[in-house]
Amino acid sequence: MNIQLIDRDKKRFLPLLLEADEQESMIDRYLSRGELFVLFDEKENPLAVAVVTKEGEGVYELKNLAVAAPFRRRGLGRIMVRFLIGRFRGGDVMLVGTGDSPVTLNFYKACGFRFSHVEKDFFVKNYDHPIFENGKLLRDMIYLSQKL
Image (cartoon, rainbow, N blue to C red; front, side, top):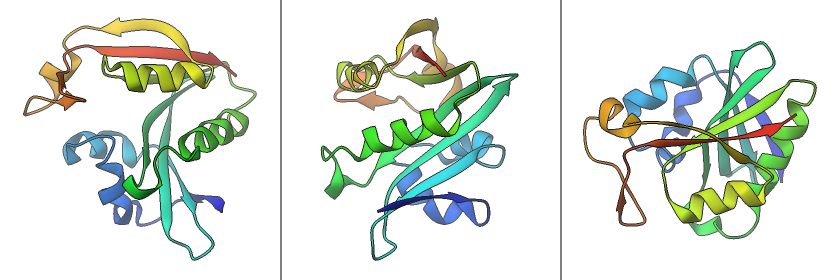
């Protein structure tokens, strides 16, 4: 397995990006300005993706992290997070925003992220349809942070 920075034709990974963010117009808001990393297997099949944007001096945000369905719960998400924390070391902080889903929040907390703040009604205001995660309607964006 290896992780590569993709700087051209990023939308070819759209099916995998949509696993973490189900509205293409939202992905379009950050994909062009973000750095796209893809974890490939030895046959060059994409197993996981991540997009990180620079939000200010020393502030980075993990906008999208997705693992292909057949490869979930094998540690690939953690591998990507560890890689990204190392890649952006020297900055001040890495943020990640997610819905109020215990599974996702616990994953990021296990990766070293801690609660930062809440953006009220983010999903209601920014998506053209209701967003559900693990059967729960998402309203607020929960931000977590980790020092770099």
